[in-house]
Length: 277
Image 1 (tube, rainbow, N blue to C red):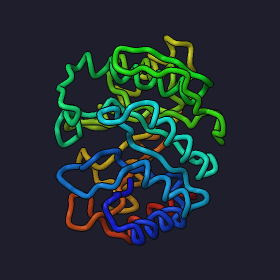
Image 2 (cartoon, rainbow, N blue to C red; image 1 turned 60 degrees about the vertical axis):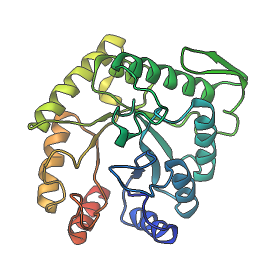
Image 3 (cartoon, rainbow, N blue to C red; image 1 turned 180 degrees about the vertical axis):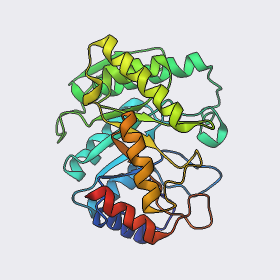
């Protein structure tokens, strides 16, 4: 996880450094501002710029939110980044938070949990249609489009959707349209939470006739107090235990001095070397 808060020359150096360290992918949060920090550069503009200064690392949002994005311009931006990057874009997608600090009410409406879930499912369905078809017309409760053609020119057949989901409806959506699944544990026993969520997701895939073992499962770290960046040994231990649960990918935060995401850069680089091996 990178922080889109530096001036661009410095941010460009960070993207290049992430690639040089051997990380498989680098992600940005998709917000207007996050936890009071502003400026917070636009995720899609940041990824387009990053695509132009890197050559091998995958780029992605963790996660794109429908809180303030509509499907048509989002699909157009996705195609553009996919083309600039030569097919290195992975689209993390989530329903978005409800709090103001998570852009949840910037459209001047407080969605009920059911409305938020309905809106998210419709958003993903429309995005999938726009990125796979031509002259696409869709009519939904929250968005509509008429005769839109965006998909020609994509490098990837359709950039992979990695869908963040912790509830039954989200898991069914991830099973139906996701190429990967994102886990964001909460609570005092995060490993138990991850285990429970993995079991539920596996059951959801089984019910839909999908092979769960073939689906990448990404764990977002940094919010549960586990010492992922305390030492290389701590990382090895936590990564190994989560791999046994079923996690295939781990996202760690680039050290950010003066915050709860600070870490020893030498340790971080040692962890990067392990992840790249």
